[in-house]
Length: 490
Image 1: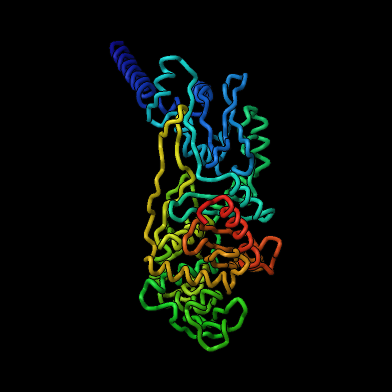
Image 2: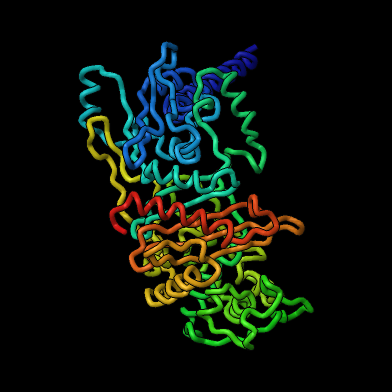
């Protein structure tokens, strides 16, 4: 009997210890996690009782704002400009949580950034409604609309940056989506909208092509390869190369041919300057074979193979290290093919880095955070991301890119009275599919105010006849012209 009582006593002590431990865990260690869990009704009601701060365009237009309701959830999120900024603002959804700027600046928008403002103190003493901070972006609505209009119905993306600051001037991806149905307080409406967007599909409108989809960059990558050649000290713009009908590749019977399937000039040789101007594949394939490490290093200097710091999640662009037993791949990688993958944001950074004397600035979508009284909580200054190439090399590559627009493959991007530096790209994809078309550029070439990257998937309406010069360059030109009208700098 005493033995049984002792066992029962020990069991009760253990149970009390476990209960005590569990209560302490819930009270002190898990309290924050439980309180912030979106499936916790109290947490949800508390969060939606705060008037979430607006997301504003550079010119002060409301892109996301909170409106009062008569339900238990006091405020509902609305998006006055709809799909034009869907991939920038993201959504704020009861069922699916926040995304994009709504996610990465969530604490600021809820007024919970750790910075105590005069408004916070006033709210605590007067029991006023809580308000979040406003987030002001770097994008002007007129330039975003210009990018959307220029791309039209084509599936693709436009990314424009200010080279000297890294600020995003426009970032448009088509197809886009309207975030508002996802912010509905009706679970049925939210789910219907979510299903309609086919989130599991690789072609879902939820996918931001500008930042979250990688493509072979094609001949736009040649600006990286030519920069590596110049940085190596082994070549100058007037260095000459053989100009064969096709480049014989080592370790194989395969050859690399030009886009025209013949020699680039027919003169027997070609200089490096002209090779970029007219986009000669055999020249850059040869550089890839001779300088594989230099090309790889220069690519990484521009942001390949690393997570670029940005206000929203981005896909990593890649330029692989290719071993000695696969040398033919080095030639193809040097012309932006093989396993080279780049997002439109990455290629915009390449253009911006060359425009900015070889210095790549960290890209930014947000200029400042403003509290409800108008005080500045955060003001984001330009920040150097990397020094990709020397100013001398950047100047030489710029001259080549100017020639490419003036008399080479990018003439469709010409702007009267302005020097435009650019490079076309026509990237082969899987066998039987039409090529992707690219264009990167900056202008004015002698005082760059905008750097841009454009991609149109599978040549868009041009199909198999598509080239970067015919399809993507005119789109870039329209956006640059729109920026010129908005800016007083050029």
